[in-house]
Length: 615
Ligand code: HEM
Ligand SMILES: [Ca+2]
Image (cartoon, rainbow, N blue to C red):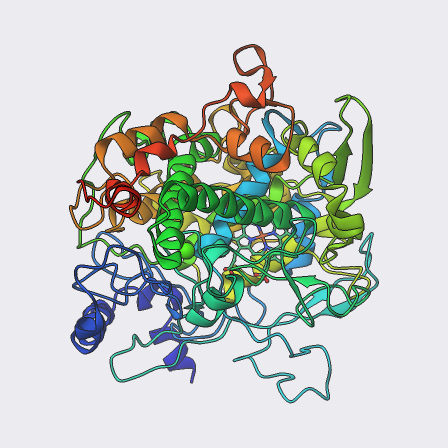
């Protein structure tokens, strides 16, 4: 057994190049079996992301495996303790995650004011929405790993709970439940190591709005219509059951294209934004092109909304996450005008594990401690503690959504927390405390998640990114000695811990996370056949339409139009300063939908009215 462990020690396993060969074989086999199902000339994306890549139709599809990057020698970036499935450091080679969380991410250890000087609350909220467009790792929800009576208790394949050590300032010594992400089912072509499953489409395709499966896609749409379902008050539609707080009246739990929409009000409001935008644009398209079928109006609207979101992500959102050099290095900005044929069918856009398990979670450090309302005088503020709002739709649902305007007026005016190693108490000490008291610690969970997913340690990623490994703890800066007190080696430091301790340029993420995010966001773009700047005649926008999307799309305009906000700055992710001052909503440009006027409809209309068909 000992021998076996040595053989498969985390580092050694990466030297097993046959795994890479097996992975590529697997992909080819998947391709061969499902290519025939693809409609090669389809104008619209499939809901589940299949057939985006015509050579490998399952790339980026929902309900497929997460990927691993391969290092320069072609070995996968994976680091299970036994090389196959045991969490990195298992059973006790690495520090307790809660101890680490207390040592490096307790906001009491940081400066008094941890607000970001330039970024707004929406920089955080939209970050979560986009994270929920690309990744939802499958995990069982009904297991209690701290309960001896649970059939999975003590089974490391399923359970990986952690202890709260004595002397904790918030929790009594106790066991914290932690269930491992579901292992993907294996077949003869699978890699030897455990892999996880992404339940949603990896593409930036607004699956948070339209769903990643046929059944969700159907349930969010109004039957026989081009519209999305809404509730009275123009709110998210509701259902009985769902993941809401148990005090929520039985039939009032909201649902959306992604199952996590009710996690926090910030997120629900962002979901609501795009439901409203879909209904706004589709209603206008229907008026413009009365001869289109409901399905055509729906799909054309979907295509425009996805283009808007892709444009916002790459030109407005990512620049507040990544420094300019990284944006340029990975060619993330769109071209100012016209088409840009970036598509490369060799690039797999599927999410890889260290993106979802660590780097893309940078946003947890940005979460603000309050949800606030801002009245229309733009000075009166009412705040609600974040911990009272988890899984609770009451705030924005009450009185047919009467508070939606005040809540959404506030988000672009509040400051987000800095991207750093500190995490607010609501998230680190009270996560879901209103559902399962006394709650849990999201930072500790992130550490535990990285280990159970076999993510290579921080230093491996520094090496991968060409940044050079750290040799001494002092290189981690002010928290180096805290790390030295619990880790045995610099090489052991967890990716999420080291990544968030790095300082980025002008408040963006540090170099290791910039590298991981840069690679993944480049793949989302270059690996997406339906990328909005494509000139593929099968589905491309006309040049005029594309230029209108580029020129007139801003999240600020979509926000103020759909929420009825009077004043907003042009760049919603940055606070209103000199060059980004507050202005009237109507002064911001809107997409020019008349460019979607279908002259065929007008020909028919003329024919019906005047008995003569003109083209
Ligand atoms: C606003 C409050 C937020 C809450 C309450 C929250 C909560 C959570 C929770 C409970 C998880 C699962 C943790 C685990 O067990 O592994 C999670 C995962 C994640 N979060 Fe957040 N989060 C928030 C905001 C954000 C933001 C702002 C971002 C990014 C900018 C983000 C990115 C992610 C990512 C990428 C994952 C991994 C998803 C997966 O693999 O399924 N979250 N979050
Ligand atoms: Ca998606």
